[in-house]
Image (cartoon, rainbow, N blue to C red; front, side, top):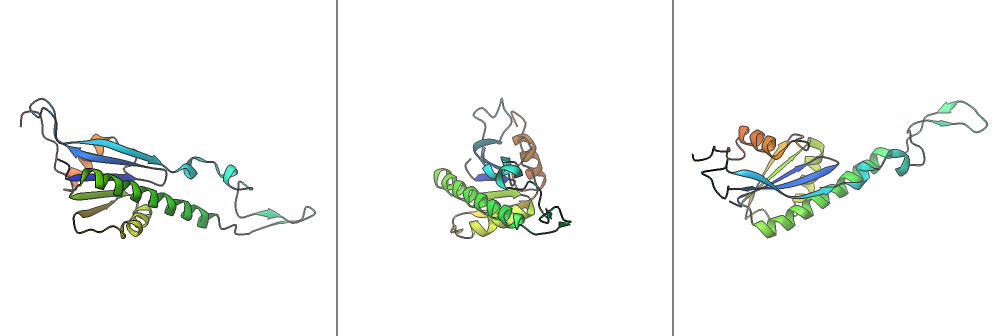
Length: 165
């Protein structure tokens, strides 16, 4: 059952799952999500003081000990660029897994902002052989069982069945 490829992402990491049938359905619940990859956004793990010369944004001192003044160091633009690059890496890994597994459906689960970045990068993929379903939700810290349960509740994945049914 390589019909589904599930991509669960946040700004910090992304996990990839395939929906697979149990080897012995009379003894195991089936189908189940099996993790088939993971990537991490290295910029999200680096503290701000290591990325920027000033750990806080928006204030500075005047020369000679004068009053503080505000400024914009465009930090949010840098962080958006980090997220955009990470979204591109996620889509590249998704393409690789699609070539390997040939799914008919790709499920993208991510917070709304990340989902928008993924959508931009996914537009380059030819979508005639598969369907893409998006869910704007952060499930990045969920277990595979919790992800499956939530996606089945949304009627995106088939529900798990008890052994022998």
